[in-house]
Length: 76
Image (cartoon, rainbow, N blue to C red; front, side):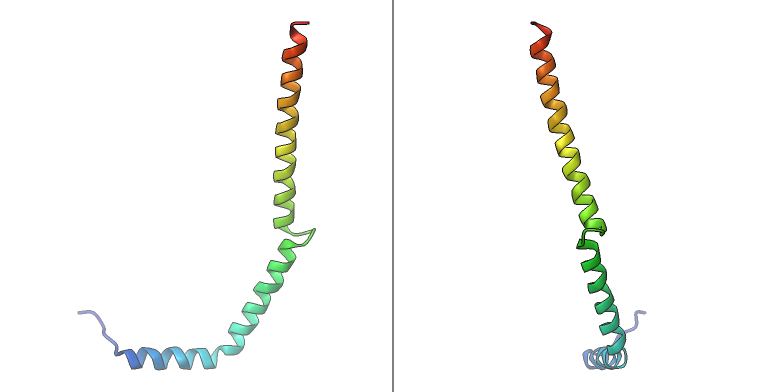
């Protein structure tokens, strides 16, 4: 048999939890915001990953260009 709760009981428990732990929720949200800002900065992982992706694209374009040059010079 499954446990059942009335809607008002669940609502009361949720409200009590939010009031009691409000400071914890605010602290965690603030910390997550700081981490997100740090990640987006020049020393952050998001910036680093985007820069690495850009480098890979540039390298691929360079390799394709050199391949075309080699093909053209092969027959000259």
